Length: 299
Image (cartoon, rainbow, N blue to C red):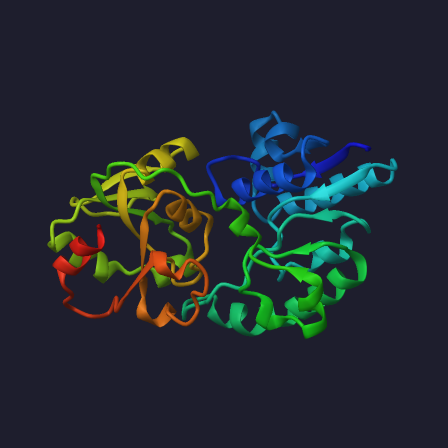
């Protein structure tokens, strides 16, 4: 079989997009691939920073795919594939192999609320038309976008690709109460349960944080760490906290792999249909909850 030339905006083990791309190549494309990314193409720091910017990199990917397509090669575009970015689905070469399509998270009332809730659905429809006219084997990372698709296209699609990341590990002795992934993203900050975490701190739970720094003297910040470190910490962890805007992140799947129970707000109960027994539903807005309840849930 001919080689497949793949563009990945991110192909690292330290980000969700990178890990999703790696998962897709290992599962769907095997070893018959040549991966290109901003890091591989641009050695000059200035050019790398331009090419690596999240709004620049996808369009460099379009040029990359056309370059090899016109040479008669098989091409693949791996990640940074949000359904709202209609230009990708319009301008990528025909027959491009697409990695999992992302997006569809719940958006909260912030500066981008109007754009994401009223403008994005228009672009979703344009992208949907292009997708099912020009491409085959459509994968979606989760099922959050299903509500925006026509029924006939739902039948042609495969959802929850992220569940391929699920692989249960042997349970180990645990000495960390909570490991939380924190990211200073506009929508994620709006959905982040700060008050609930303050309550956990007041109950003297041991809380570790990865990602961006959470400003509190009562938590241990590790910053951005590699995937080995993440899983090493999770193997020692009892609980984590679900992201309200998307309960099925790669971090959530890694939690499930490491026998970590995930706390989710009661408002998410009807939205979480998979791995439900591994979630604990709590009212994050409630001022008081039983510390002993969580201690019991450790076992």
